[in-house]
Picture 1 (cartoon, helix red, strand yellow):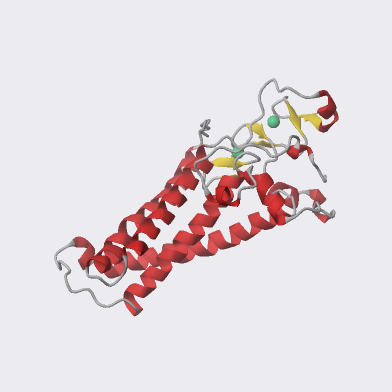
Picture 2 (cartoon, protein in one colour):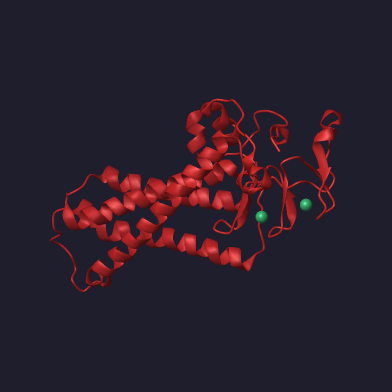
Length: 265
Ligand SMILES: [Zn+2]
Ligand SMILES: [Zn+2]
């Protein structure tokens, strides 16, 4: 697997991704420490629940870093333009480089990106043709992890049996209520935000429209290529193997040449 790293220099983006990472770190540290591990040690829950939480957490942070550090589809300085595709290329008036249709110039990153969806400060990167699948994975896993966290926070108070072997002097025992309230607040915000973002991204992919195209002056035109949801997702994820759609640690190969050229605008 060959991973090409892409790093955007933007202090505001670093702050945003730092907040997202902080939320992940807080919950991955405190939810097992306060809820899962003590209940497992007292025999209230099976070990599989602890393992599944760590798996969801690992997949979420892997998708975050892959989406942030993957090349979104930056155009090379001197691109090779096949003769048959020349009519679909145009000159960017900001960076003076040739780019295929549906590309967009990102002012935060300072370059053009193929089939750019939008620039996301929360991953400090553009979302374009080559990392859109990773962004979709991130929305999915963040949704799963925040829901898992909310359910565990809820169960801690209303469902699980009381813990008997707690060290009352420990910091986490003394501040358990406050720590879990912060976790539940983060869970509500993340679950609400990620669910709406995942739904918007998914409908954009299924109707073959980027966020930029949706917001552009062409928004009144009729969009939506006739294609199945399986084909739309396979094209974005670069594979028809559905299991691989959920794996962040792999590279993406475009299913067909010229995907970025198909245009409705
Ligand atoms: Zn440009
Ligand atoms: Zn950008």
